[in-house]
Image 1 (cartoon, rainbow, N blue to C red):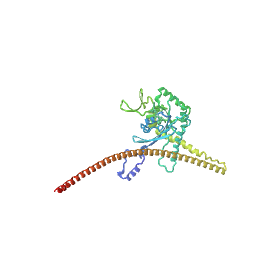
Image 2: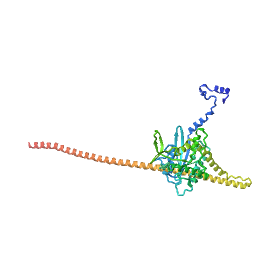
Image 3: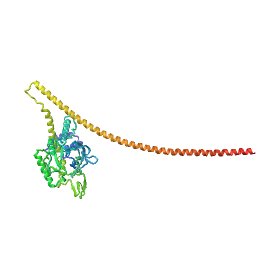
Length: 441
Ligand SMILES: Nc1nc2c(ncn2[C@@H]2O[C@H](COP(=O)(O)OP(=O)(O)OP(=O)(O)O)[C@@H](O)[C@H]2O)c(=O)[nH]1
Ligand SMILES: [Mg+2]
């Protein structure tokens, strides 16, 4: 059935100049809202996507290698190594941003690394800085969102946390503690790191152990949703059944006999392609995380974790606003005064915190700039020294040449003088001889 009645359509069409009519037979009979998905598609393509992936796990578990392998890019390289290679290994949180493009789609990817996690002798509370980082990003987002003038609210919230587990039989206390404390703040996907160090049976056993421990401790990890697209349902179910993913990563690429190129790990006994689903779950993880559920991770972050945070934040303020109807007006005023004071104090603390963060960021930037300037100065100094040396060499060469030239000049003048003397002598002598002759006569 047509959405516009025929007489109305004729009326509308007759008011439009004929040369501007672009309707084809195909679009006639539709008002156009069937094209909304395409509009959304075009709009989102134009805007691009933002995604933040956090990697947590002990040093040397292959976090950076896996991130490189997953996004087929050198986010970390010899020139720009992972944070643990650049900074001291205390639990710190470091974000690296890269812009990726695949076909026409732009992805602004932020990788958040946590160098030093689990490296101390006492790892109690090593999750705290990470938790704080996640909350700080929520707070930033909340502040941006509640601004009077907001155009684009940058989304730096952590959308997914890959938690790397040591390839050893079961979870350790630190793993359980981390997941328990962060489960309500971020989508956690546990992965068994360096799975090539386990036999197939050990790997299977480890997966079972991890799942039962997660269950036992009531830990909420990210649940990939059930697919509703008929085509992929079976595949996604199979991939999901592989959780927790046992992964390997590699920065090496080999040429395959079929003429292709693949990321692989080389061992003394042979080569393993990291995307071989027969052995490892790298492809399962990448497919689920990037191809199918990246937007779901963003949505869950927004609708569940961020919403939780907002609620916690708002009820934190609201719970103090207890309105005791039975109290007398003076007591009520006193109560309100206390609430205002508490709110003021909280705002002050928040502002202090924002200020401190900003100061820290500024200081870090200044340090970096100072480093840059020092490097620049050092370079300039070396260039100047080299130029001075070259100038000194040129001056010495010039002075040598000048001395030689002056010697030649002096020599020539001497010669000239001798020649002049000789000529003089020769001109005086004949005259004297003539005089003598005259005297004789
Ligand atoms: N056997 C094996 N080694 C791996 C794997 N992935 C990475 N490695 C090696 O492990 C070492 C550490 O890898 P990285 O990717 O730097 O590890 P990381 O977790 O980022 O280390 P930090 O940044 O120091 O915390 C490197 O020598 C890698 O080649 C893997 O899947 N299996
Ligand atoms: Mg690293």
